[in-house]
Length: 136
Image (cartoon, rainbow, N blue to C red; front, side):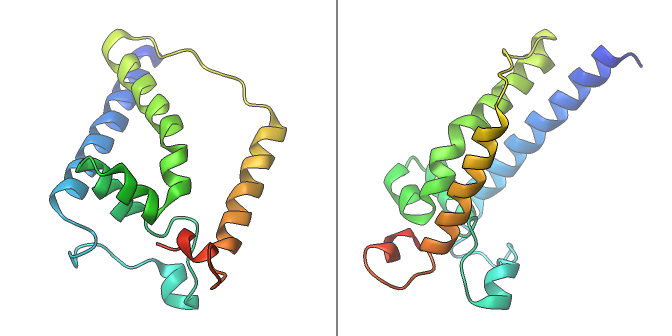
């Protein structure tokens, strides 16, 4: 199998897995279903991780409730356009054989994003208003 067919097959698998995952999240509400495991970090420490609330926020987005999603995990909602670009690029690769244009991300931006995630992680665990609004 040449690399073009392998890339298209991989892209198809990525898109199918994302669509399947979103379908499951749409059908099974993470807030009321026992089908999802609890966050291991929260279970071990009692503190929220940067991803806490993501499944429930994605469920709210599949129901077209963006404000509810922002309440559960604002960082995930703000980063979702980048994930969507990645998935659309893979869908284009699967269908046309060409992905969307790739962008070079400077290392400083990646380090800044890591800093934002770490600060968000810290702030959402401080039990003082208005920081409590960051908790899921």
